[in-house]
Length: 259
Image (spheres, rainbow, N blue to C red):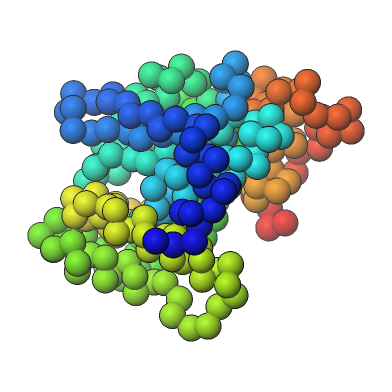
């Protein structure tokens, strides 16, 4: 068992934030798993999407930290979807079910690509107020595996896991990084063949983000990202929980920043 799964912070998270399972599609096998923490009166929360190897609980540290500041945070694990449009439609239904008109959407790796595609999908009736991307991409062709996208469903689980593990570092790393890798490997081991195959299919399906459909969406990094929305209807933070200095909104910058 990895060190992080045995840590006090992780055990506190699992004991205080319930895991919810929600079905929004006609297919009852498509189950969204999520942790919803923070003030439920916040209608524009931060929503977190994991990478190929991730589950909703990989964001436990972010959930604990941000809810400690008063943010509402929803960490998701998506069902088995084999098509990007199917994913986007299911995600829209989930937001409808949760009665969330707009969200601040964070995504890591595949999660970041799916976040961008969802913002693109809903651009005529926007559901994404801002995007926060980590180690993501906007065009699946960079992997040079689009030709394999229709074959992943045939591959056994051990082969799919080997493909994903090939992206994990194998050289010497700091102990904290080593623990994080062990934690992610443990999460990967818990994924079923169909879950992993569908994620790799989405990851490699021939697709790219149409940038002109995201021109009205703010994209930046998380440590400065949320302050610009304080004192607006899109605030994910309860104002009673921050100081006067903290709630002063920053002047909006360019849609995309490299800060």
